[in-house]
Image (cartoon, rainbow, N blue to C red; front, side):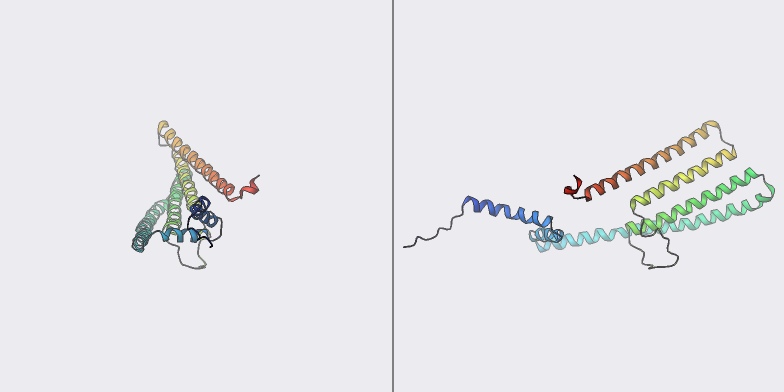
Length: 226
């Protein structure tokens, strides 16, 4: 008689069965469809009710980005008020061209430039911030679309912000030197503030450079790094 085969698993079979899930995950992590395979494996262990709750929660959190839209609308309204300020200063500046000295005209002109720089800063924050954190603007290939729209990420937005602030501070400092109405201590305080902004901008640029260099190194395969 042929002896009956016993349904007993050897130690190798048990070890092989225990390593199959890890092997599958290892293979999936190196394949082009790794994200989809891993997501399917995770969803297999979740119940349909839990998945439904999670999807609802994630959709609600994703829709929460629209809470930022009123902030950008408020900045646009502030831009309109800034226009009123610019018109007021321009009306005061126009007669000065004929009756005031050259230094006074330059100081008044620097004030107008200061307002324009703040307005430009508001436009950059509204457009780039809205496209980065809320939604893309579906205006197509409009002829008046700024060339930088859609290409300014958070890092570029941060550098443009600190650059505009440094430029505004430099204009304010130049106006103080031209006007000569502050004490020496006040001038040194303004100068220290400007230098602090410049150093902060340099540190931001260095940090962004290090982050970009790290990303490039991480993107290179290990066998090509040697």
